[in-house]
Length: 77
Image (cartoon, rainbow, N blue to C red; front, side, top):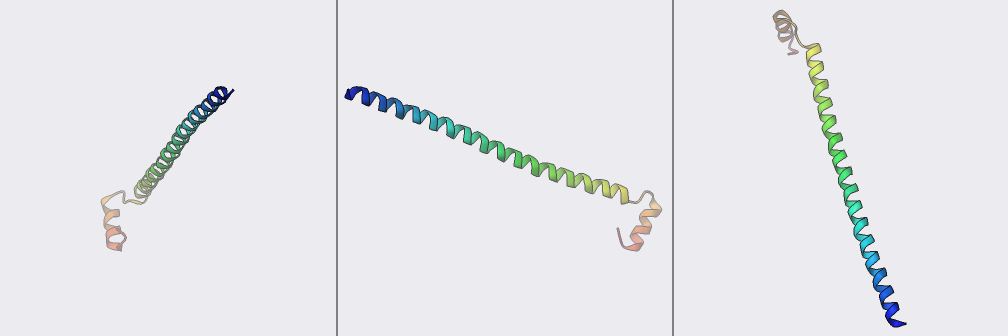
């Protein structure tokens, strides 16, 4: 009966190790996915800010030479 006990214990230990490796691999993939989505969010915020600033500059910018000179004379340019 002792050999059966050792074989059962060996199978249980091997199964636990396989499960642990699978769990660690899944956790690593999930962690990488979170990091990737956080970087994508940061990049999207940067792009949105740049686009908003470009739109504001285009909307508020001088449309002609006279408008540019007026802004420079007023000290806002």
